Structure formats: C-alpha cells, structure tokens
Image (cartoon, rainbow, N blue to C red; front, side, top):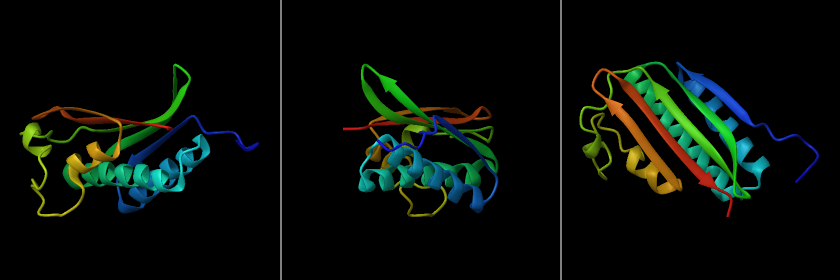
Length: 138
C-alpha cells in the first residue's frame, strides 16, 4: 500500500451522464487503492457505470454510494445504487440474461451480478430501487 490515504466512502448524486463518469472514476480509484488488480478495478467500474446508467435512464435521479469494507480480515468494496423512481415491476425478469425494457444491449443487472461477488436487489412498483453489490480483494 502507498502512503496516500484510502478514501473510505464516496457519494455521487446521479443526474447526468457526467455523474455516471464521476461514479465510475471514483469506484475505479477506490478499488485500485484497496489493492484490486487493474483488471478487477475496471470490472468494478463497469458495474458501477451500469448501475448509475440505470438510475439515469429509469429514475432520472438517484445516488451511488461507494465504501470500503473490512470483514474478518478481508478487504472489499461495497456499492449501493439507490433511486426513488418507479421501481422494477418484474424484478425476476430484470435478472434474466437478455431481458431489456430499454432496448439497450448493456450489461443489465445480470451482468452486474456476474461481475460482483455479492448482489442484492430491493425494489417494487412506486418504491424505487436499491441495488447493493460487493467485491472482495482476492
């Protein structure tokens, strides 16, 4: 580890494409500081980008919270993407590969789930959506 302090938390309000880039960059930086490989740092940044893009596309506004973790001597990164949008009407379908309501061919939630070690989705019509993911340093 270098002498630079590792940021323990970052919060990015997502309201524009610029905010997606900011969340992605912040996540990559924190991942590298924690000791993730450059490749894994990029995968984490990709997952964050997808989550932030979903906020912008479906809810117009939300936030991404990125924080460092330490549990039982293991270090990791937790990402929580939350919005107060319309919610996901069929969450089980949203987790199926190839399912898209936007017509986009992005990673989608199944891709985010594959890239990260832990994945949790809380949503419902009119309740908004919270996606919580974690990645552990190997």
